[in-house]
Amino acid sequence: MPLSRRALFGSVAASLFALSETARSETAPGAEADGFTLLEARPGAIPLQPAPAAPTKIWGFGGEVPGPLLRVKLGQPIKARLVNRLDQPTALHWRGMRIANEIDGLAGLVQKIVAPGESRDISFVPPDAGTFFYQPLVQPFSGQQLDRGLHGVVIVDEPQVIFADSDLLFVLDDWRLDNASQIIGDFDNPADVIRQGRLGAVSSVNARAGMQVLTFQPGERLRLRLVNAAGARIMDLSFQGGDLKVIALDGQFCDPFEPARRALPLGPGARCDLLLDLPPIEGQSCKLILRGETELPDVTLLEFQTKGAAKPPAPPILPPPQNPLLPAEIHLEKAKKLDLTIEGGWTKATPAGFKPSGEALRRTWTINGKASTGQDGPPLFSVKKGTPVSLGLVNKSLFPQVIHIQGHVVRLLHDHDDGWEPYWRDSVIVPPLRTKHIAFVADNPGKWLVASAIMDHFANGLAGWFEVI
Image (cartoon, rainbow, N blue to C red):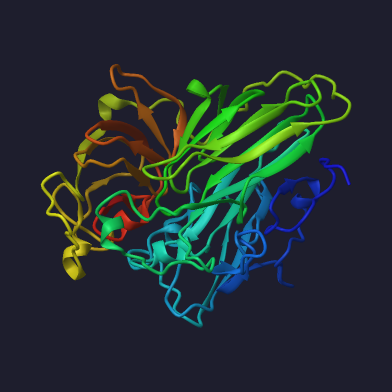
């Protein structure tokens, strides 16, 4: 069968997500009689690596990776039933979704932990269209649960669908496996905690290792929804071939642009929507490459090949409508200004073989000199609803940091002038020994995390919270 906008091929666990009108129906895999989608966190096994490798034992929603795709139109509710079949507590974070604090806040700080054997019904109407991510958020188990495969994707369709011949979802991940294709259980490894975090040598697309080769007609326009599901890796993605435009970052639409040097870094949990116009000639290809890190080599994740008769030229890419719920301006002159200084981890003075443990491990990383679980201590700051906030993210460590601002989206300010980048983000990459400034309007009441999106750093001190009253 050829791919089309009218047909949905495979399940949520298939190696290729082809999204279509069928996926927008009210009945979805995992739907229960009362309209809730079952998110049952439990063990399972998946064919992560090609045969003859054994299936990899994982934790997943429904025993699959990724979990059920939740897809609604803007204005429709998300209804999910979280059931915990694990032997440790869990809770859900709806990454990038600006929803109520009691639904999305850190377990233990705001929402209640879901203990083994317990369940919780979750229902809300997303305020924004876009591509989002659901993941565990419970200290100190988030990293292990995420790295074992416990996550999924939410798509909230925009009212006027952006034209593409095919709408494709690719969940990118890395895995640390042994020779038997099983996940190595060295979570909270001090060597990972004091450095970049837990990196895996096996990369995957939609929980399948190895390069995926996909064939389309020449000239087709593809909408690529990329999600970084890794617990620590900042995915340095590079694109070869075709005409490429970014149309959304972290779930918020932006004016279309070609990324500098056709490269795009995605931190853990980050999402990007792109339009890729394939070459109009048969026999051409476009590639998505994951650039290597430390001892890891470059890996080609996806190759799009052209075959058959050419499609008519696609219409011009128009700017998506601006989100009317986000501020057109942020008045920096009225902003609450604060620096958050990040310190910790390995330094050139660290003794060889240094392996902190126990409470010392939990204090590996600090914000403004204090290690936190994100649940303890006073807030980093407290502001009234509607107050502009400007934060300096001062990274004094030797490793890149990814800082997530929960419950809000932010503008990345320019390094050398008073402007800001023309897109919204829910997390920001801060290079080693550098400072990045962000600004946002604190318009979502509650207690919200400011924390590392790198799970090993988050669980070991690099967290805090702020309050909007």
